[in-house]
Image 1: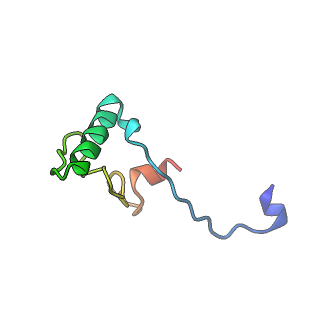
Image 2: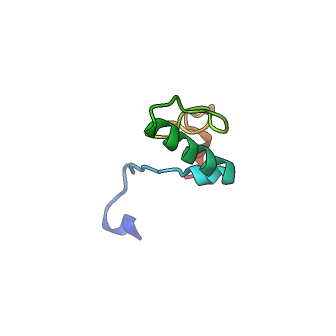
Image 3: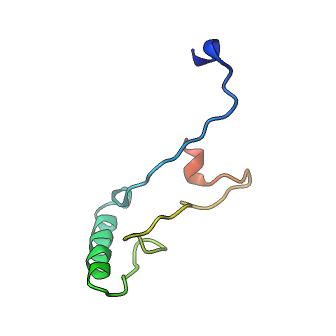
Length: 75
């Protein structure tokens, strides 16, 4: 085990969530938004609470009492 080599004090993790995690509707919305943004249009927001196309969203899901999000707790 890794603890035999060195005591693990902290682990930093980054995850990248896909629009496909929301199913076909998620993929369709992302494709539509990419098309809209590429043509200078305001992207339509339906399935997700924020624009996904050309965007980075630092938080997924709600915070729990332990100050982690539900998505982070899956880790």
